[in-house]
Length: 388
Image (cartoon, rainbow, N blue to C red; front, side, top):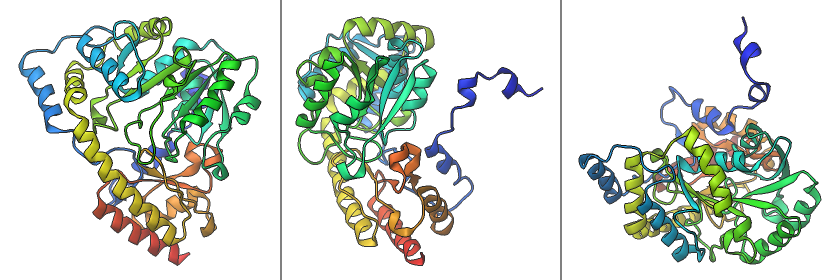
């Protein structure tokens, strides 16, 4: 009996595996590999944050928390959102603590989508967006942000993609994989389209604290958008807490009520010790975030200059910790480039087409690794390109 054919749901069978994990898994057993592939900080979670989790275990705090998360953590998130982004949320009714930002996106989509509802997905984007729309019963409508526009979506492109079935639009700024960031004026023009068509925006703001040029603006802070924004964020990138799996979603109470039901049935609550770590991170971790951001800025400047000198045209990302250089000058497509680079020089990059059609002709290089590793990676990439 073919279990896959007989029992797996059709929409699950048709999902493609993650293009990021494919290249990460390909390094199994290889030595001396430098990975610029997985988007994970090379920093260790700050000690005082880890210590808070340890103390919570020593004090015996090992039970479930409230489904929405520890009240103290939700209060700290609300204060943080007000201080950092000038957006006010009620910690009792508008904030849900989740198992990473990934769960926040998943339950948000499942809460708002009826079968057949369309969601505009701005690409290039993180690999899970369109699959999560599909798994929620929706239809992803992928719109390509183009290189000539610095990979920023234009309001006219959104307008053109809207139909009577459109329910929401998904945007990540600063963007993974390009590092591009929408400024306030660009957000306001997009907000005009969203409001005029009575849509929601699912705003992935996981990289909001990692901005190097200019000021960050949250979609929820744009006039008329707070009630239309599902704001997703977490602790993985800014506090180097990827393995803790701690995120949150902020949105009006009516939507929170719906997504919290799904969270209750699917998850119950986020890990208790991680929540205590999150409280400590929000209270005392801002200096840690500043130090990490300074280091990322230095690495960004180095890798952008190096890639351009090699001949791989690369714009300077405004946020996150990724570069998205063009590899068109090599005559290879993104899959070929990444595969041959891995086998020739043991450097992992992710093919741009893993993030959508407009990513073809590019590769994603993460600079969330040490300067020494970046310098060696650039030497290897230069050597590889010269052989072409």
